[in-house]
Length: 199
Image 1 (tube, helix red, strand yellow):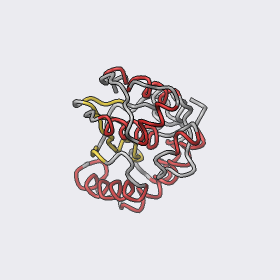
Image 2: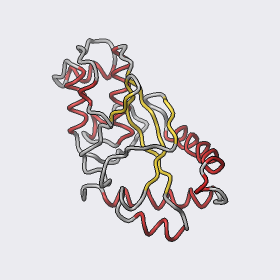
Image 3: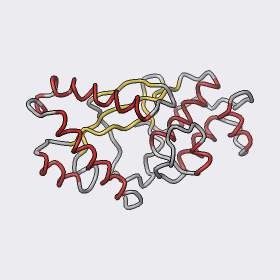
Image 4: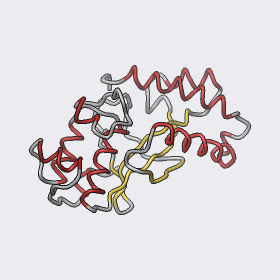
């Protein structure tokens, strides 16, 4: 992943809900907004589908942090977009994953993560956030550009549909039923939540 300093440092003008909120908080440039969001603590929000939840709770996940900046970019006419991706979660990335892969007889747990895309480059505003991961995610099995504030339901449907494709295209996943992957995903989410603040 690249640092957010690759983004154009344009001014934040009035006119959009996110733009106006950043201006109210004293941030008048896109880079300042990115820095603010990056430095907010990592934490699960009470309502990830609320586009203002990051400001209300002053914390966020990859979902809400990138939704906020992608929405700001859209308001400013910047070519910065939100993508969702599926990565191969292993013990090396998230401590505790080894127990899940052993229990479900999987090579890894396919997990969803989102990031920002700008001119073919990727930026993760949760890197270095004590987000439950031991290291940044460098490779994805699947990626798709999405709306900044994609709903939890829509994101889950993308994940499920992508899993079906991965079960066909990835040799190491052939013969594994989708329900086993979905159960492993639920366990993976629990581990990620438990690990927040520990890495």
